[in-house]
Image (cartoon, one colour):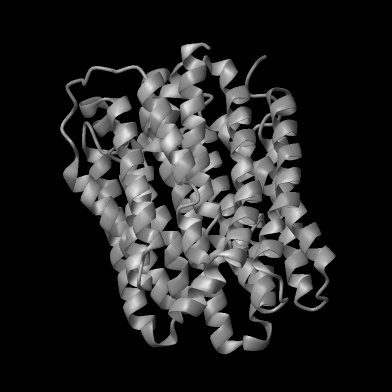
Length: 450
């Protein structure tokens, strides 16, 4: 087996573990809510806490890899992840569960940027689109299998076991990383931008906290204050980064049109789907009386449709370019979410299957195209910075998607309880028009030669 194949395999396994922990907990939310008597806004932190941890640890990934070596960072990250998984399973309160989920995210957050940088550096530019297609195809296994497995675990055991379900795979990734990844000598690293790290971390945490509190009528003032403080911190971070010679993140890379558009697409399409998926699981189990396994099983048609979309991307991307794939993908996802809104009026199970099928095709057509085009025009020396930006945006899209959709549902349940789910799904469906506008600026036709 070639060395680059081994590196890609370790990266893919880490990516798989990351996705399992993102999707497997969804079907456990009703059980967690009942156990801790928690509202939707607080429940969202079980998911957002994990994604927040993933996001916060990505900015220093390049610095840690150069200072300690990629192999050491990868293995230590997995060890922390496995320890936190056990802690989350044994949590005795929603607060402790959220804290353990954040630590779990901190532990697993370095798997993707470090592995992605190592893998992409070993493939030439015209080979990266096919590598991206393989990454997305392998990643399909997680959303396809983990909700079903999680539903069976919840139905036959309890919600705690979903947090340790990925431990065997995490252990396998740890062993393979020790055996397959070459020891790279630590390099003299540039001075770590501590100020930038603190501003970015504080800003993101404050924004998520503010959005969560805005979902509670009694917390509108506090939520608004936290949100404004978070925006101010991120503004200070961007302003400081533009002045530094070696900032925490090279934000100038966002000027590259394909990378910038791919990041916007991820925020508006896969990110929104993550939030819609959360409230859909609540609606299907609490209102439609689906079992956890039945609700989780809807990810099977989602994954079949995703498989078709990703396969299509791998075959025609180099000929059509991203625009011809992005726009249909956005519109198809919007149609799928609209079918969920129809379920609130016409509650038929086949509508749920059709909705998840359309969302799977649309979301994955967009995400696989975004993954394929994001790094096409990025030079090899800039891959580490671009990978960090890409993965921060990716994790942030999931986090904001869950938080925003949960807040919308919470507010609607307070003011329009009779149609809260219907309006939430409707607003999410209309939101796909935002990325379509950005996609219209992309050139037509191919962007890379065979």
